[in-house]
Image (cartoon, rainbow, N blue to C red; front, side):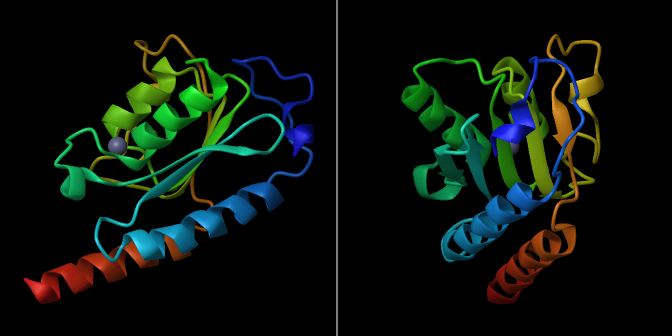
Length: 171
Ligand SMILES: [Zn+2]
């Protein structure tokens, strides 16, 4: 998927040659992983993809199992990817996740200078990248990321709804 980053600068939105195929591939992967994660945690998964199309970080929600308020999929994927990359800057990378990042994760992605954020379902309550508030366009954001929401939106939304429905029926 090198073509995504041809002539790419960190902060410029560029014309895409083939907008959806790679996103779809990774989003399907994310959804499959989320199904596994959903057995013990909120089924949210994130992957960080480098400029060569390699997955360099993977995370899933572990707030409950680790009692970690910061245990969101995006934060965990970012931390892993920064170790692999040996760098905290992600201008040439993208992150793909099934739910819109919350305000904490959106801010972390801005701090990490993520090149592009791709997510499935919008989160109208807690979303930090358009669903509730859009931090990427806020004046406090010193880094402009490309944000694409709504990839496989219906599937992403449904898998979360099914999970919450099951949770309520267990309680
Ligand atoms: Zn989050």
